Length: 101
Image 1 (cartoon, rainbow, N blue to C red):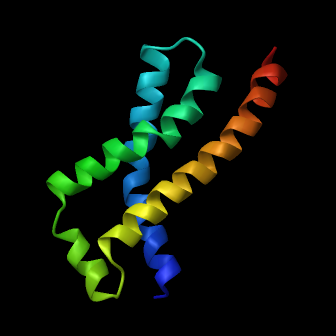
Image 2 (cartoon, rainbow, N blue to C red):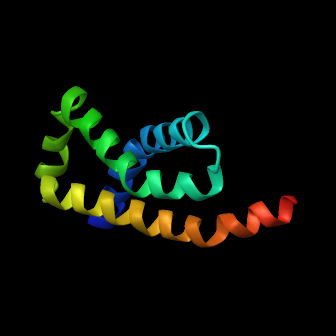
């Protein structure tokens, strides 16, 4: 496996928690879903999902370390991908919202 693929596998394992948290906060607390969801997805979602990983799946980092990827590199790539995807959502979701009206 290449290192990029390993980073993607790590990110996929945090993505479900990130999406669930961002969706729940956007729906429950804020009525403007299409503007708030990407912001929470980029900022608080990665923090919550990485905290969950740190508490419940701490030994998973050893697998990636044995493959030559540090914990800092995994966290950095996870935040980077969340910011990239969130930025794309910030650009695209207003069009989806206006298309529905």
